[in-house]
Image (cartoon, rainbow, N blue to C red):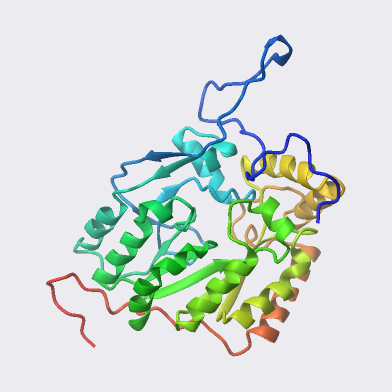
Length: 356
């Protein structure tokens, strides 16, 4: 897949290849004059897990581009290392870089299940769906040990509150027992991110994620259990995975997906520098073409914050992508849809039962 041998300074197993400057910090470490140093300045490549103690865990989403009302993230930062991830910028608010720091310094919220239960006990709460992983993946590798997401699902089940999960990790199958209980009351949706069927591209684009084959098995097992599953072919990156749209949707449909969605890549904030550096090291022969085509979809810019156009792009190329996606959905997912979540089941343990 790679046009040439990758850059010699490539950090294997990581998406970002550098730490971008944090605009909220006054100072930073840097090797300004390496020729005067006897030994190279080494960076710690190990992943650190830092416990965070938030006072709230559920966030209201105010965006005209999203129909999400509330979201929840048990982790900040993500070891998956997806180079395009929009959540990288938010890591700067915690005093870290959006680059390698985002993948190597993971904030964990062990008190998230208790905070969620406290939230559900508010008198004003009536059972609106909550999206888990609106920012970073709730099933990233450390979840295998900490099981914060599993305990969150137990709280959702206890209160009969609908939940929608977004992930690209097969670890979700560990919690199939809880998901099935939620699904019996129409309380769960799952979205599985599937960006490429090309393993070489996947390893560079999303280095610490499960393979495409592994994600298709997730769709197969979840849909086989009757759980509504949507495939997210996102983001679409021109000249890298844009030609795979029909194959991605066909593969997901054959695995049992009920619906599909997509977004065009957009490189806001620090992600612009990270992606440019990454694509030039990973695909030197086509880097300028990729960057040019991304600009073509976003009014001549790599970054795009405009509501209404930022998620899908604009112009001739973006329209071609939209048509290819729509045609593929019509062909492979015809007459399929996601069964709606039930918002009438919510109840507080020991309280009044829901009325039907």
